Image 1 (cartoon, rainbow, N blue to C red):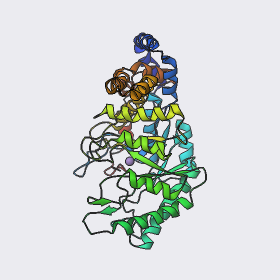
Image 2 (image 1 turned 90 degrees about the vertical axis):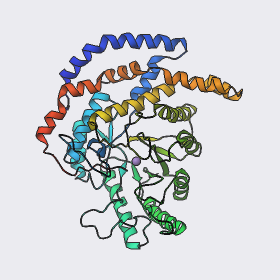
Image 3 (image 1 turned 180 degrees about the vertical axis):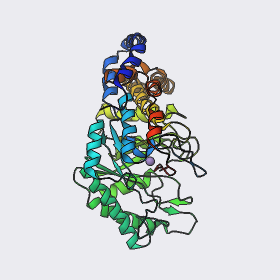
Image 4 (image 1 turned 30 degrees about the vertical axis):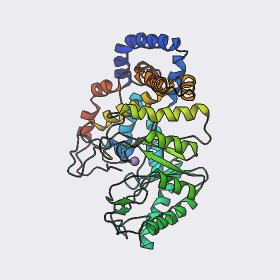
Length: 428
Ligand SMILES: [Mn+2]
């Protein structure tokens, strides 16, 4: 079954196919002069996928307000349908990352729906940053690092439940992000709080299946405004080291102070075998959760430059999970996620074009100018024909947003799905 009419898709593609072929051949000639085979780049792009966060297909909000859009998903099964639209048109998002308890459902039903839509499940995300109805202990003052043993135990058990559900739907990773921290100097003892966090994390890790990975995510601030327990990549690395070989650090691009050199953090984590994966988004000031590549596409490219460098040199244990993590306040979430998935692919394709031999020589000879222009040359290359051809050959759309708009999908689901006041979308 498909969510978008295949004849509409074929018709829309036919209109732009000739122009695409011309552009692809022209770029192919140009790359050929640089000794790059365009088809090889296209194959790598084709094989690349980024997971969609289930919460991303609902309209997001800010601390001030949320303005719901039409036809918002009412629950996980609607969310999966929206995710399928994104995958059908972009062919870049084969899996969905669930958030528990927002997406809790009978595993067999989740599997059946995903199979029907041609989707898989990526990392499971636990939630101990808000209280759920009927919960015995509040997370107001923390979860895995809470001063109260019973509260910590409740948070541990929630994570174990996420693993159990994940196992039933073919996931093999758990992402843990906690809102724990403090709002005032002196409110918490940094050391004892982190000891409690580590003890709790160890209890979760002890129950992690052998073929699973545990990702922990750092964040400089929010919802705690003075300190967070896992505030930066250093603490995140300490956690991964303390827990063991199946524990890795997840890098959310928005979880750093402005201007932090994230690509360098990526390089360090790769070097020491602890890069677990990414939550891609973009930001201007804080954890804005804006669309990936919308503010600083060069930074995204520089992150991928490190990833491709690691991929090509076969860095030991290098197998990062790629996910989007965004909040869409003023756009149709499906459109934003499609464009973002393509931006991630674009950065990957551009990074594949870097002349690494030349770059290495310039670095060794301390030719700073030529080294940096080598990166820029790749970044400036318009790789759109590669991305579009990969999408087209995989059965997707040459221009996903225009096909999506032509399909009137949003208008159709708006009739089927009555407005919900509180969609399960969050900024994490
Ligand atoms: Mn995140």
